[in-house]
Amino acid sequence: MNFPDSVFQKKGLRKKSFVHPALKNVTSVTKVVLEKDVLLNFPYHSFDSVIDLLREAAIDPDVVSIKITCYRLADRSKIINTLTNAVRNGKQVTVVLELRARFDEEANLEWKEELEEAGVKVLLGVANMKIHAKICLIKKRVNNRTIHYGFVSTGNLNEKTARIYGDTCLLTSDRNIMADVNRIFTYLEQPKTRIHFLRICKTLLVSPVGMRKQLIQFINREIKNAKAGKPASIILKLNSLSDEILINKLYDAARAGVDIKMVVRGIFCMLTENDKFKKPVKAVSIVDEYLEHSRIMIFHNGGKEKTFISSADWMVRNIDHRIEVACPIFEKGIQNEIKDIVQIQLEGNVKARILDNDLSNRYVSSGNNKKIRSQVETYNYLHRKSL
Image (cartoon, rainbow, N blue to C red; front, side, top):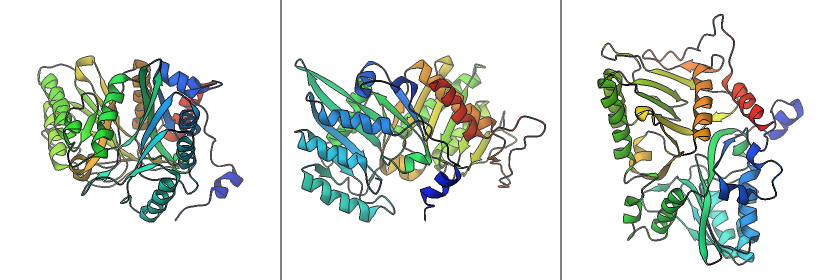
Protein backbone atom coordinates (compact mmCIF):
# COMPACT_ATOMS: atom_id res chain seq x y z
CA MET A 1 0.00 0.00 0.00
CA ASN A 2 1.21 3.48 -0.84
CA PHE A 3 -0.04 6.86 0.26
CA PRO A 4 -0.78 8.99 -2.82
CA ASP A 5 1.74 11.73 -3.48
CA SER A 6 -1.08 14.27 -3.41
CA VAL A 7 -1.46 13.78 0.35
CA PHE A 8 1.95 15.31 0.92
CA GLN A 9 1.84 17.79 -1.95
CA LYS A 10 -1.49 19.39 -0.96
CA LYS A 11 -0.54 19.75 2.66
CA GLY A 12 2.95 20.93 1.82
CA LEU A 13 4.42 18.38 4.19
CA ARG A 14 7.28 17.18 2.07
CA LYS A 15 10.25 19.39 1.38
CA LYS A 16 11.48 19.53 -2.18
CA SER A 17 14.77 17.94 -3.10
CA PHE A 18 17.49 20.18 -4.46
CA VAL A 19 20.32 19.82 -6.93
CA HIS A 20 23.72 18.86 -5.54
CA PRO A 21 25.91 21.99 -5.40
CA ALA A 22 28.52 20.45 -7.72
CA LEU A 23 25.83 19.96 -10.37
CA LYS A 24 23.95 23.26 -10.08
CA ASN A 25 23.80 25.33 -13.24
CA VAL A 26 26.18 23.03 -15.12
CA THR A 27 25.79 22.29 -18.81
CA SER A 28 26.87 18.67 -18.37
CA VAL A 29 26.67 16.30 -15.41
CA THR A 30 29.03 13.99 -17.28
CA LYS A 31 31.74 16.62 -17.51
CA VAL A 32 31.63 17.14 -13.74
CA VAL A 33 31.73 13.40 -13.00
CA LEU A 34 34.72 12.93 -15.29
CA GLU A 35 36.57 15.52 -13.20
CA LYS A 36 35.56 14.52 -9.66
CA ASP A 37 33.40 12.22 -7.56
CA VAL A 38 29.94 13.45 -6.56
CA LEU A 39 27.92 11.84 -3.76
CA LEU A 40 24.16 12.22 -4.00
CA ASN A 41 22.13 11.83 -0.81
CA PHE A 42 18.50 10.99 -1.60
CA PRO A 43 15.83 12.19 -1.04
CA TYR A 44 17.55 15.46 -0.13
CA HIS A 45 19.44 15.69 -3.42
CA SER A 46 17.47 15.44 -6.63
CA PHE A 47 17.37 12.07 -8.39
CA ASP A 48 17.18 13.99 -11.68
CA SER A 49 20.98 14.18 -11.70
CA VAL A 50 21.16 10.41 -12.20
CA ILE A 51 18.63 10.61 -15.03
CA ASP A 52 20.57 13.51 -16.57
CA LEU A 53 23.79 11.49 -16.49
CA LEU A 54 22.10 8.66 -18.40
CA ARG A 55 20.33 11.03 -20.81
CA GLU A 56 23.62 12.67 -21.68
CA ALA A 57 25.15 9.25 -22.30
CA ALA A 58 22.22 8.30 -24.53
CA ILE A 59 22.86 11.19 -26.92
CA ASP A 60 26.66 11.48 -26.60
CA PRO A 61 28.18 10.37 -29.93
CA ASP A 62 31.32 9.20 -28.11
CA VAL A 63 29.43 6.83 -25.79
CA VAL A 64 29.70 3.24 -26.98
CA SER A 65 27.77 1.32 -24.32
CA ILE A 66 25.75 1.52 -21.12
CA LYS A 67 25.49 -1.33 -18.63
CA ILE A 68 23.21 -1.11 -15.61
CA THR A 69 21.56 -3.23 -12.94
CA CYS A 70 17.86 -2.63 -12.25
CA TYR A 71 16.28 -4.12 -9.15
CA ARG A 72 13.14 -2.01 -8.71
CA LEU A 73 11.90 0.51 -11.25
CA ALA A 74 9.22 3.19 -11.15
CA ASP A 75 5.87 2.58 -12.88
CA ARG A 76 6.61 5.11 -15.61
CA SER A 77 10.35 4.85 -15.53
CA LYS A 78 12.42 7.66 -17.01
CA ILE A 79 15.39 5.31 -16.61
CA ILE A 80 13.82 2.87 -19.08
CA ASN A 81 12.97 5.68 -21.50
CA THR A 82 16.55 6.87 -21.41
CA LEU A 83 17.97 3.40 -22.02
CA THR A 84 15.67 2.69 -24.97
CA ASN A 85 16.58 6.08 -26.46
CA ALA A 86 20.24 5.13 -26.12
CA VAL A 87 19.61 2.03 -28.24
CA ARG A 88 17.90 4.15 -30.89
CA ASN A 89 21.02 6.30 -30.93
CA GLY A 90 23.21 3.28 -31.65
CA LYS A 91 24.50 2.52 -28.16
CA GLN A 92 24.94 -1.02 -26.88
CA VAL A 93 22.75 -1.20 -23.80
CA THR A 94 22.79 -4.06 -21.29
CA VAL A 95 20.28 -4.20 -18.43
CA VAL A 96 20.49 -6.73 -15.62
CA LEU A 97 16.92 -7.26 -14.37
CA GLU A 98 16.22 -9.10 -11.14
CA LEU A 99 13.02 -11.06 -11.68
CA ARG A 100 12.94 -12.09 -8.02
CA ALA A 101 12.77 -8.54 -6.65
CA ARG A 102 10.07 -9.08 -4.04
CA PHE A 103 6.68 -7.58 -5.01
CA ASP A 104 8.13 -6.37 -8.35
CA GLU A 105 8.34 -9.72 -10.15
CA GLU A 106 5.45 -9.01 -12.53
CA ALA A 107 6.56 -5.47 -13.25
CA ASN A 108 10.09 -6.60 -14.08
CA LEU A 109 8.79 -9.26 -16.48
CA GLU A 110 6.90 -6.51 -18.31
CA TRP A 111 10.01 -4.32 -18.38
CA LYS A 112 11.94 -7.28 -19.82
CA GLU A 113 9.58 -7.47 -22.79
CA GLU A 114 9.63 -3.73 -23.39
CA LEU A 115 13.42 -3.52 -23.20
CA GLU A 116 13.99 -6.47 -25.50
CA GLU A 117 11.54 -5.07 -28.05
CA ALA A 118 13.59 -1.87 -28.04
CA GLY A 119 16.81 -3.80 -28.70
CA VAL A 120 18.25 -3.76 -25.19
CA LYS A 121 20.25 -6.81 -24.12
CA VAL A 122 18.49 -8.06 -20.99
CA LEU A 123 20.23 -10.34 -18.50
CA LEU A 124 18.09 -12.11 -15.91
CA GLY A 125 20.56 -12.68 -13.14
CA VAL A 126 22.18 -15.74 -11.67
CA ALA A 127 20.62 -19.02 -10.54
CA ASN A 128 20.05 -19.13 -6.76
CA MET A 129 21.44 -15.61 -6.29
CA LYS A 130 19.74 -12.23 -6.40
CA ILE A 131 21.53 -9.40 -8.15
CA HIS A 132 21.15 -6.70 -5.49
CA ALA A 133 24.14 -4.49 -6.37
CA LYS A 134 23.21 -1.09 -7.81
CA ILE A 135 25.86 -0.28 -10.39
CA CYS A 136 26.19 1.43 -13.77
CA LEU A 137 29.04 1.46 -16.28
CA ILE A 138 29.16 3.89 -19.20
CA LYS A 139 31.87 3.45 -21.79
CA LYS A 140 32.96 6.14 -24.21
CA ARG A 141 35.75 6.43 -26.75
CA VAL A 142 37.58 9.74 -27.12
CA ASN A 143 40.61 10.04 -29.39
CA ASN A 144 41.14 6.25 -29.42
CA ARG A 145 41.05 6.25 -25.61
CA THR A 146 38.44 4.37 -23.58
CA ILE A 147 36.86 6.20 -20.64
CA HIS A 148 34.66 4.52 -18.05
CA TYR A 149 32.31 6.32 -15.68
CA GLY A 150 29.02 5.63 -13.94
CA PHE A 151 27.84 5.08 -10.40
CA VAL A 152 27.54 2.79 -7.41
CA SER A 153 24.44 3.22 -5.27
CA THR A 154 22.84 1.88 -2.10
CA GLY A 155 19.32 2.22 -3.51
CA ASN A 156 17.13 1.37 -6.47
CA LEU A 157 16.93 3.24 -9.76
CA ASN A 158 13.41 4.31 -9.01
CA GLU A 159 12.34 7.93 -9.30
CA LYS A 160 9.40 7.40 -6.97
CA THR A 161 11.19 5.70 -4.07
CA ALA A 162 14.11 8.13 -4.45
CA ARG A 163 11.74 10.75 -2.99
CA ILE A 164 11.08 8.75 0.18
CA TYR A 165 14.10 6.43 0.65
CA GLY A 166 17.26 7.70 2.30
CA ASP A 167 20.03 6.44 -0.01
CA THR A 168 23.47 7.41 -1.27
CA CYS A 169 24.78 7.24 -4.84
CA LEU A 170 28.39 7.85 -5.86
CA LEU A 171 28.78 9.29 -9.36
CA THR A 172 32.35 8.53 -10.32
CA SER A 173 34.91 7.99 -13.04
CA ASP A 174 37.50 6.55 -10.65
CA ARG A 175 39.48 4.06 -12.72
CA ASN A 176 39.85 1.48 -9.97
CA ILE A 177 36.17 1.52 -9.03
CA MET A 178 35.04 1.38 -12.64
CA ALA A 179 37.49 -1.44 -13.43
CA ASP A 180 35.79 -3.55 -10.76
CA VAL A 181 32.31 -2.56 -11.94
CA ASN A 182 33.39 -3.71 -15.40
CA ARG A 183 34.55 -7.04 -13.95
CA ILE A 184 31.18 -7.54 -12.26
CA PHE A 185 29.31 -7.00 -15.51
CA THR A 186 31.72 -9.36 -17.28
CA TYR A 187 30.74 -11.99 -14.73
CA LEU A 188 27.02 -11.26 -15.03
CA GLU A 189 27.16 -11.76 -18.78
CA GLN A 190 28.45 -15.35 -18.33
CA PRO A 191 28.01 -16.31 -14.66
CA LYS A 192 28.63 -20.03 -15.17
CA THR A 193 32.18 -19.57 -16.39
CA ARG A 194 33.35 -16.17 -15.13
CA ILE A 195 33.11 -16.28 -11.33
CA HIS A 196 36.84 -15.51 -11.19
CA PHE A 197 36.09 -11.96 -12.37
CA LEU A 198 34.43 -11.30 -9.02
CA ARG A 199 37.39 -12.74 -7.15
CA ILE A 200 39.89 -10.44 -8.85
CA CYS A 201 38.06 -7.23 -7.89
CA LYS A 202 40.67 -5.08 -6.17
CA THR A 203 38.76 -2.04 -4.93
CA LEU A 204 35.12 -2.98 -4.35
CA LEU A 205 34.04 -5.44 -1.69
CA VAL A 206 31.93 -7.99 -3.53
CA SER A 207 29.53 -10.60 -2.26
CA PRO A 208 29.43 -13.54 -2.22
CA VAL A 209 33.15 -14.06 -2.94
CA GLY A 210 35.08 -11.69 -0.71
CA MET A 211 33.03 -9.23 1.32
CA ARG A 212 32.72 -11.32 4.47
CA LYS A 213 36.46 -12.02 4.64
CA GLN A 214 37.33 -8.36 4.08
CA LEU A 215 34.85 -7.10 6.68
CA ILE A 216 36.34 -9.49 9.24
CA GLN A 217 39.80 -8.18 8.36
CA PHE A 218 38.68 -4.59 8.95
CA ILE A 219 37.15 -5.49 12.32
CA ASN A 220 40.27 -7.47 13.30
CA ARG A 221 42.41 -4.42 12.55
CA GLU A 222 40.31 -2.34 14.95
CA ILE A 223 40.60 -5.07 17.59
CA LYS A 224 44.38 -5.15 17.18
CA ASN A 225 44.62 -1.37 17.54
CA ALA A 226 42.36 -1.32 20.58
CA LYS A 227 44.44 -4.00 22.32
CA ALA A 228 47.55 -1.94 21.59
CA GLY A 229 45.96 1.06 23.30
CA LYS A 230 45.43 2.93 20.04
CA PRO A 231 42.18 4.66 18.94
CA ALA A 232 39.80 2.16 17.35
CA SER A 233 36.24 2.61 16.21
CA ILE A 234 33.55 1.19 13.94
CA ILE A 235 30.52 3.13 12.74
CA LEU A 236 27.81 1.19 10.92
CA LYS A 237 24.55 2.24 9.30
CA LEU A 238 22.45 -0.71 8.15
CA ASN A 239 18.91 -1.78 7.47
CA SER A 240 19.42 -5.08 9.27
CA LEU A 241 22.02 -6.85 11.37
CA SER A 242 21.55 -10.60 11.81
CA ASP A 243 24.68 -12.34 10.52
CA GLU A 244 25.95 -14.44 13.44
CA ILE A 245 29.59 -14.53 12.36
CA LEU A 246 29.84 -10.74 11.98
CA ILE A 247 27.90 -10.14 15.21
CA ASN A 248 30.33 -12.39 17.10
CA LYS A 249 33.20 -10.48 15.56
CA LEU A 250 31.64 -7.22 16.77
CA TYR A 251 31.40 -8.78 20.24
CA ASP A 252 35.14 -9.48 20.04
CA ALA A 253 35.68 -5.84 19.14
CA ALA A 254 33.54 -4.60 22.05
CA ARG A 255 35.47 -6.82 24.47
CA ALA A 256 38.72 -5.39 23.13
CA GLY A 257 37.53 -1.83 23.69
CA VAL A 258 36.65 -0.78 20.14
CA ASP A 259 34.19 2.12 20.12
CA ILE A 260 31.14 0.81 18.19
CA LYS A 261 28.24 2.98 17.11
CA MET A 262 25.37 1.84 14.91
CA VAL A 263 22.23 3.08 13.22
CA VAL A 264 20.14 0.01 12.33
CA ARG A 265 16.58 0.63 11.18
CA GLY A 266 15.17 -2.90 11.10
CA ILE A 267 16.26 -6.35 12.22
CA PHE A 268 18.78 -6.15 15.04
CA CYS A 269 20.09 -9.37 16.61
CA MET A 270 22.92 -8.10 18.80
CA LEU A 271 23.35 -7.42 22.50
CA THR A 272 24.61 -3.91 23.11
CA GLU A 273 25.63 -4.35 26.76
CA ASN A 274 27.70 -7.05 28.42
CA ASP A 275 29.90 -7.10 31.50
CA LYS A 276 32.81 -8.15 29.30
CA PHE A 277 32.46 -5.20 26.93
CA LYS A 278 35.01 -2.51 27.71
CA LYS A 279 32.58 -0.02 26.19
CA PRO A 280 28.83 -0.44 25.66
CA VAL A 281 27.75 -0.51 22.03
CA LYS A 282 25.64 2.50 21.04
CA ALA A 283 22.84 1.51 18.69
CA VAL A 284 19.72 3.37 17.58
CA SER A 285 16.93 2.84 15.08
CA ILE A 286 15.43 5.77 13.17
CA VAL A 287 11.94 5.50 11.69
CA ASP A 288 10.66 8.78 10.30
CA GLU A 289 9.20 10.37 7.17
CA TYR A 290 11.86 8.84 4.92
CA LEU A 291 12.83 5.18 4.95
CA GLU A 292 16.45 4.95 6.11
CA HIS A 293 17.90 2.67 3.44
CA SER A 294 21.57 3.49 2.91
CA ARG A 295 24.33 1.25 4.25
CA ILE A 296 27.51 2.91 5.46
CA MET A 297 30.63 1.53 7.11
CA ILE A 298 33.41 3.61 8.65
CA PHE A 299 36.50 1.96 10.15
CA HIS A 300 39.00 4.13 12.06
CA ASN A 301 41.92 2.18 10.55
CA GLY A 302 44.65 3.78 12.62
CA GLY A 303 43.55 7.30 11.67
CA LYS A 304 43.36 6.57 7.94
CA GLU A 305 39.62 6.02 7.92
CA LYS A 306 38.10 3.58 5.48
CA THR A 307 34.60 4.63 4.45
CA PHE A 308 32.25 2.51 2.35
CA ILE A 309 28.74 2.79 0.98
CA SER A 310 27.04 -0.51 0.24
CA SER A 311 23.96 -2.26 -1.11
CA ALA A 312 24.43 -5.06 1.43
CA ASP A 313 23.03 -5.46 4.90
CA TRP A 314 24.89 -7.62 7.40
CA MET A 315 22.67 -10.64 6.85
CA VAL A 316 23.59 -14.13 5.65
CA ARG A 317 21.46 -13.70 2.52
CA ASN A 318 23.31 -10.51 1.52
CA ILE A 319 26.81 -11.63 2.37
CA ASP A 320 26.66 -15.22 1.07
CA HIS A 321 23.78 -15.49 -1.39
CA ARG A 322 23.57 -12.26 -3.37
CA ILE A 323 25.67 -10.19 -5.72
CA GLU A 324 26.36 -7.12 -3.58
CA VAL A 325 28.88 -4.31 -3.66
CA ALA A 326 30.51 -2.11 -1.04
CA CYS A 327 32.28 0.87 -2.57
CA PRO A 328 35.12 2.79 -0.89
CA ILE A 329 34.94 6.57 -0.70
CA PHE A 330 38.32 8.12 -1.49
CA GLU A 331 37.57 11.85 -1.58
CA LYS A 332 38.16 13.37 1.86
CA GLY A 333 35.39 15.93 1.60
CA ILE A 334 32.83 13.22 0.79
CA GLN A 335 34.16 11.06 3.63
CA ASN A 336 33.62 13.96 6.03
CA GLU A 337 30.12 14.59 4.70
CA ILE A 338 29.11 10.95 5.20
CA LYS A 339 30.50 10.97 8.73
CA ASP A 340 28.72 14.24 9.53
CA ILE A 341 25.37 12.83 8.40
CA VAL A 342 25.79 9.61 10.38
CA GLN A 343 26.80 11.69 13.42
CA ILE A 344 23.60 13.72 13.07
CA GLN A 345 21.66 10.46 13.14
CA LEU A 346 23.54 9.20 16.17
CA GLU A 347 22.71 12.45 17.98
CA GLY A 348 19.03 12.34 17.03
CA ASN A 349 16.61 12.49 19.95
CA VAL A 350 13.20 12.89 18.34
CA LYS A 351 12.68 9.89 16.05
CA ALA A 352 15.55 7.70 17.28
CA ARG A 353 14.88 4.66 19.43
CA ILE A 354 17.41 2.91 21.63
CA LEU A 355 18.38 -0.63 20.63
CA ASP A 356 19.20 -2.40 23.87
CA ASN A 357 19.20 -5.82 25.50
CA ASP A 358 15.66 -5.34 26.83
CA LEU A 359 14.18 -4.82 23.35
CA SER A 360 12.30 -1.87 24.79
CA ASN A 361 12.64 0.39 21.74
CA ARG A 362 12.50 3.43 23.99
CA TYR A 363 12.83 6.80 22.31
CA VAL A 364 16.12 8.56 22.92
CA SER A 365 15.37 11.24 25.49
CA SER A 366 16.18 14.83 24.62
CA GLY A 367 16.04 15.86 28.28
CA ASN A 368 16.97 19.51 28.50
CA ASN A 369 19.00 19.32 25.31
CA LYS A 370 18.06 20.70 21.93
CA LYS A 371 15.64 18.47 20.06
CA ILE A 372 17.34 16.93 17.03
CA ARG A 373 15.15 15.31 14.39
CA SER A 374 17.87 13.77 12.31
CA GLN A 375 16.16 13.83 8.92
CA VAL A 376 15.28 17.50 9.30
CA GLU A 377 18.83 18.29 10.43
CA THR A 378 20.29 16.29 7.54
CA TYR A 379 18.17 18.26 5.10
CA ASN A 380 19.32 21.52 6.67
CA TYR A 381 22.97 20.39 6.67
CA LEU A 382 22.95 19.44 2.98
CA HIS A 383 20.82 22.41 1.96
CA ARG A 384 23.28 24.84 3.57
CA LYS A 385 26.06 23.25 1.51
CA SER A 386 24.02 23.77 -1.66
CA LEU A 387 23.59 27.53 -1.18
